[in-house]
Length: 220
Image 1 (tube, rainbow, N blue to C red):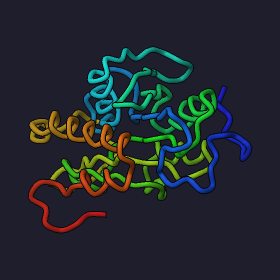
Image 2: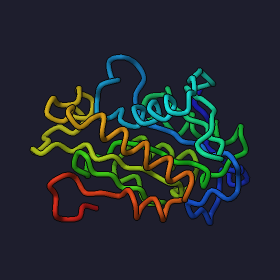
Image 3: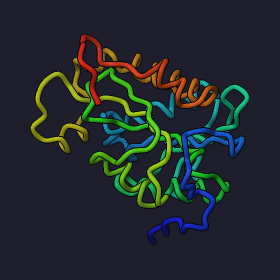
Image 4: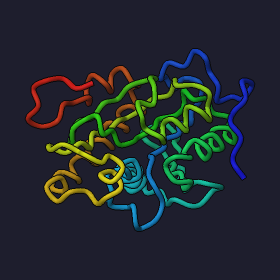
């Protein structure tokens, strides 16, 4: 049975969200991906990789709760709940909406980490709000929360060659020449999320948003 979307009276709906975390002492950090060994090494699962790295740093064990794997811990002086939706990418919003509803959180208490094919590999963009830009997981979250105003960490996954079939690329194992940077990309993004939790989106954007290595032109 599909999870219902949030109504306008639900606490996760906030027309004036601004990416701050003042409303609640608890922050939800959701990494997007697909469950199962078939997908675990694919670039579409980079959000899972980052949440797993944060769980290791926080000594948090992930466990099943509804349609998610979750773990509760602390980053600095803030309580966090780490989330890996298990609904497959295109239905990510169902599980995330349920987490926010159960914990009486707003969309402004949510950070979503996901892959971005429009950005080259090793680039990182933290932003608040905006459209899904073709990402079905983010589209699902926007549809379930009825708002675009949550914080995102977009991890670039585009290789340095043309991609003729985007779906095939994101659902295939990470290319060998990209794997040499995998640990650094995940660690850098985890560092950015920890700083974001402590200092907010504006300072995190200034400190951690970066171009891909060797790029001189700014990407969107």
